Length: 168
Image 1: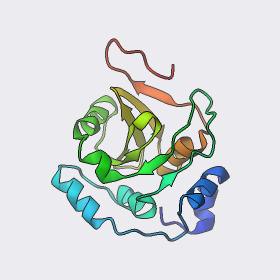
Image 2: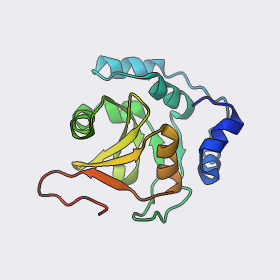
Image 3: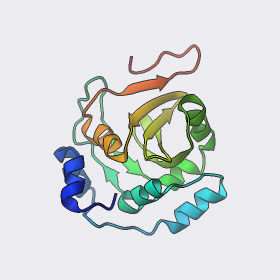
Image 4: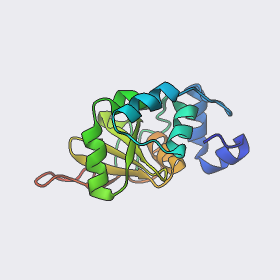
């Protein structure tokens, strides 16, 4: 995530970049997250280089939304990058995401309806709330664009038995 500004900007919706800047992000931002990573590792989470880079760039930021009228959902809440806040109480959600769609998931923050956002080892993002699991993006860039700029439909990839997926 510590790409050069021109490369970074070319990977994100301009509205997402603007929202990031309004939230306090700037090219080259690098926050020390070593204590966060150690705390989460002690709880059984396995960090990846992409998750660590993501947190170094965005930890502590409350981003957007730049667009609230998503194609199939209301994107009325910011994305708050807080790995420890999510991870310290929600290991079961990380495991549920892994069981439903595969992989090992690391906490990164909060989003829509206080869903908890996790990152897979390869950088894919998913969110969990009340048993529902949403695919947020295959890369951190796709995920940021969805959570901040609502640039495509929100896809529910798992709902518990007896619960209707939202959105449809």
